[in-house]
Length: 84
Image (cartoon, rainbow, N blue to C red; front, side, top):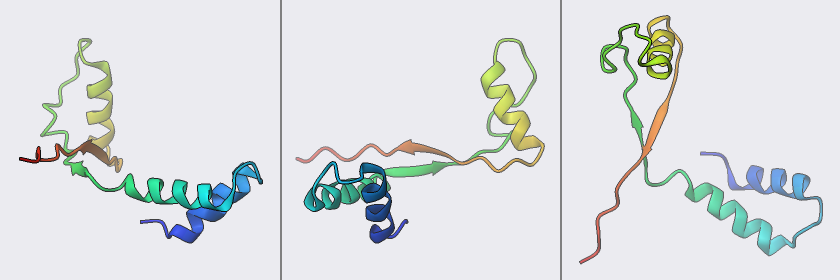
């Protein structure tokens, strides 16, 4: 997790006085909240059914990169339970 202070510094620099301090604080909170509700998906060429094919250029490229040793992290949004 990126420290809140660092997020605020980046926002202050990029927004350069266009918004007030409370808006910067709200934005920093929202950015920090992006980390919740996500889970890492295992990335293995075996899990992906790796095989070269003209029918799967994107997935085969990704699997090939993993097979060659690239570190690739995929995340998916976790379904939150519906409140009863």
